Image 1 (cartoon, rainbow, N blue to C red):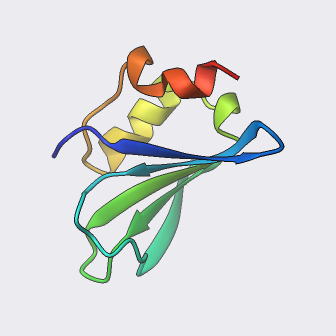
Image 2: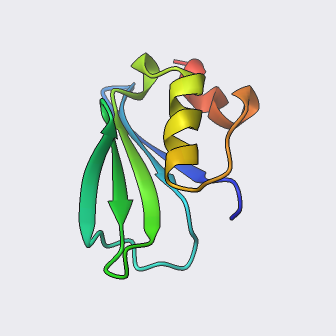
Length: 89
């Protein structure tokens, strides 16, 4: 599995949510969501495969916590450069 692609949602210039896309080419529709490591939620497709990881208030979550959640859903981990956009605000 490749490194996740991050999508950040901003409101009034502040990041309010982030979504890590774990697999490209999926419909993007979640068949099921499971809270895994508060405040993170894993998204799965209808076949039960992980498609994403949602982070509300992404600037409050540490890189080690993100990586633990990514490992839990079978994804590659990230390094500081991968989440630089979250640190720039």
